[in-house]
Image (cartoon, rainbow, N blue to C red; front, side):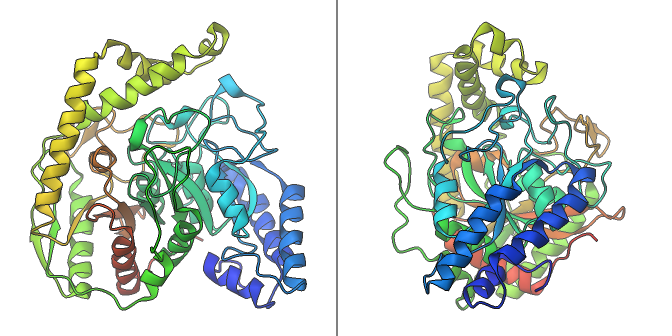
Length: 465
């Protein structure tokens, strides 16, 4: 058994009795013990609980039963989703020491598919920023260079996957929180279409329809299998999509599509981007277009920067969450998160309505754009990884940028809900990963995975170490 097998190969090998779930788990726990202290990807690991799960998988196979498509695959769960009996701090001192009394919907579906949850991965407080650092657990570090950040807010999950601690981990993406760390750590991350995987927790999502669960994975096929296990409606999600008839892994294994025209935009018309990032992603876009037999055209959808409208909805959701806290809880918030939540206090109902109107119009622009192009490609982030403790760069390519200046490509597609993925495009001259973002038409998750698999085959990616 290889230490770094893809998740699908682990599951299929366990189901075929080539090795056991306990053997796989022990190898993963050894890698975590060896690697995690330097990276702080996992904030808590639960060997005994994981061994119980793995033993149950092995027992099911001994009885002639199929434990599921993720049989015995060790996974990490981002600490924004509850796992029964495990810490559920959401990266905040407000919930220091809290233990979840139930599984989240995605977790329950992953367990039902045979996955073995080994622990919780780090995230910034309530997932509010694009790099992973908080006052409760400290910063997570990038496996390619531990002085750098893995991005965020699913940075713990991305670091764990890129470092080979686990082959698959959960994330969530409300403004880029899967694609940003996938880009900065050189792994594969997909934000499915809004509603594809249900958001059915106890309270309404603070960022409304923007935040979408999804995987960080070492291979595209692993991500597809994760979606097959977790997608589908839930009665507690008002916006969940019906996934009946979608076979995401089957799509990855099917004959790849032949496309006509692919668009590549280096800046979406408003972003400031490191020239090295543009050069690497432009070359990667050309390679993907060639592999798909498509013409590559430099073009963008033409919408203005939607940050103001995205922020009005996201920040006001966090304001509501803060207002539901006790004064003592609010006193434990990080100043950065408190400032972000305060933005929402000044936003009026009319501004929210205006933002929703712009969301409607930007989506219409995207619909028209996809009538001309099969796919949109952009850089995933405007820079490579920066210092683990932050802050993000205040200058890019000699120009001053704001706190979100390094992530101008991700939040627009949370705003519209289109499926989008980050694929490893290559390395910078200093050896840091650079991601290529692919955005597909609305609901075309299976198509996006197919395209990603074509790119993976044409430009195989590797991992540090």
